[in-house]
Amino acid sequence: MLDDYAQRIADGQAGVLEDAGRIAGILVLEEGADGFLLDNIAVLPEYQGKGLGRTLIEFAEAEARRRGYREIRLYTHVLMTENIALYRRVGFVETHRVSEKGYDRVYMAKQLQ
Image (cartoon, rainbow, N blue to C red):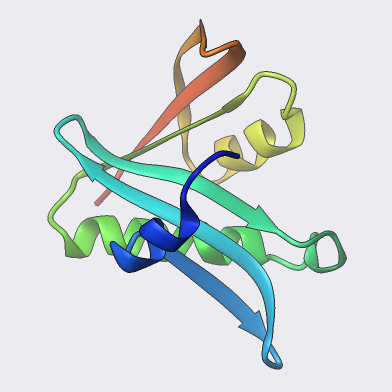
C-alpha cells in the first residue's frame, strides 16, 4: 500500500492489463535473492469474475519462466479467502503462515514447468 509505484514502474516491475484503453488490472513482479515474487495483483471490481486475475497470474508465470525461474511465490492476507482459493485453483500451494509487519500472511508457491 505504501509502495513507490513510480519507482516500481521505472524499475520495470509493474504491469497493467487494459480494456479499451482503461486499466482493468495491475501486477507487480519482484526479483530477489530468494526467488521470483508476485508482489501485488489487483483487478478492478467491475472486471472481477471475468478471468482477468488468471490472465495476470499466467503472465507472471510466463515472465518468471522467461527469466529462468522454476518457482513463483506470493503472499496474501489470511482474510483474503477468495484470493487464496483462486491461487489454489491455479496450482499454488500454501508454504507457511506468519504474522509480520502487523499483518497475518499466507505464503504460497507454485512450481513452474
